[in-house]
Amino acid sequence: MIEIQINSLVKSFEVGHNVLDGLTFQIDQGERVGLLGRNGAGKTTLFRILTRELEPDEGQVSVGQGRRLGLISQIPVYPPGCTVEDVLRSAFARLESLAKEMETLESRMAAGESDMALLRRYGSLAERFEVFGGYDTDVAVNKIANGLSISPEQRKQLFDSLSGGEKTRVNLGRLILEDTDILLLDEPTNHLDLHATEWLEEYIRSFRGTVVAISHDRYFLDRVVTRVIEIENGKAEFYSGNYSFYAVEKERRYQERLKQYQKEQAKIEQLEKAAEQLRLWAFMGMDKTYRRAVNIERRIERMRTTAKPTKARKMDARFSTAEFHGDEVLGIRNLAKSYGDKRLFDSITLKVEGGERIALIGDNGTGKSTLIKMIMGELYPDEGRIKLGPQAKPAYLPQIIRFDHPDWNLVENMMASKRGLSAQSARNRLAAYDFRGEDVFKPVSVLSGGEQSRLRLCILMDGEINFLILDEPTNHLDIASREWIEEAVEAYDGTLLFVSHDRYFINRFATRIWELAEETITDYPMGFAQYRQLKAQEAAEKAEPPKPPREKRPARGNRAQQNAKRQLTICERDVSKAEEKITALEAEMEAAACDYERLTALTAEREAAQEELDALYERWEQLSEEAGEA
Image (tube, rainbow, N blue to C red; front, side, top):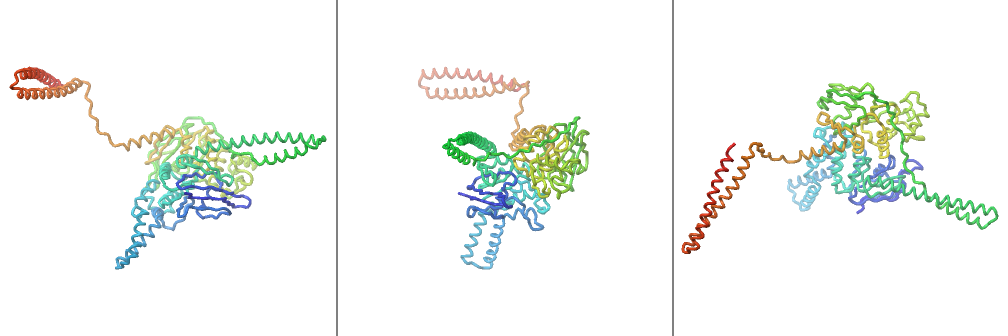
């Protein structure tokens, strides 16, 4: 069954430039689709068209009849005084309308009305209320809130008092609770911590409906999507697999197109030489060759329709690293910090040496950004101290980018960041970061979040540094920009401390993990993969039922006693068998009382059995004494 059908979709925001230019595709029920493309390619525009927030200029958009569609993109505005709990429960709007109508009918029935139509209506409403989960809303809200780390205290807070990331999580929870048929997710992991991201992945994998996700989180795409649609130059390119498949297949297609183009160019060059020779002969009087030359030139023009395949230009800027002399880059001693009644951390002592690459991880709200700001001197600790090494030259990329002069253009901000920098040098520097042409004269305030991060990095990289501090460096960046910053960090040989929920980024760079939880930092001197393996092992051990206490092993000196006890058990078994044998022989002797020969034979067997039993008794007494010694 087709859930979403897009035919020849066109949308533009400025004359002569179509963001979507003949976009055509379909998505079937139950598919998990990743929507990829560079920032500005039109992915969010497509979502806004699907939700009827925007109208296309041309083309048709259709969603399956009766299918409920939910979008997480921009955060809606809720009435003043609305709490987080109110926002989550707004997902049950249709259930509330059913409940109100049921209450009205209950009042009428209590007043004495007994019309059959009224009873049938009430029965229908009650059935629908139960099917839609009306009696289990509390369970559903608690489950989603726990999964997305929305604490009971936070559920009582005003929604407007939350940070942007917290609002995104609450809104995501509301969308999931709405029980939609089609989930449209626009960068859902940008403001989620590792715990919430992994919970969301598991939810999507078990979700029965259709999912379309715009995401630049490569781990998320690999674990969730089974098909990729890339929007490039306003049109769709299709890949039947996850992100890893897409990356390999995209490169393969590029190489194939490049080979085809080079083959055609070689053929064109060969034909051009032939046409030139034929024209030369025609000039020398061979008139027949002129027509052949014209035919070849027409053939060449038809072949020129194949454009040369291109790749996105890679940014080639690198950090300017200052030499570091010494051992300690950063020292933290007995650090403590609180906000009101909330204690973030207490008695933290850590040391950072030159060349280390440390990932600071933890759930949202545990104080990661606060610690970074204290290291940079923007905040002060309640107790303890933070000391940078005398040779440390830090540079800091904050999570929320701000510029001193947001109304200035890019060139002016670049020149203001470094004395003596000419306008041309500033433009050259910006060009290395993919800011070209008239874009450099835009006010900084109109740039997207990803573009502002790129500009801030451009300014940071222009100075010599040896201690790089990054707070969520890949947020708001498309995959191409993420790969660029990863290459820049790879080439940087100084000390690195970063906060990130991008598992690909952490896995690639971290050689040491600082886990901030329960008011302390646990130091793991290992990479991210080893850390995850260790945490999984700890979780498995906690989940295992307690093992029964093991019997105390005997000491070495009691081995003879234990052996005697084992032999005694065997002897007792043999005594029982011998006694049973004698009892059976005596019964046979009674039966053969009149048969002299038979009775004689049985008597002999009885005596032999008695001798065997006597020997066993002696053996039993001996073993009993040995087992009772010590």
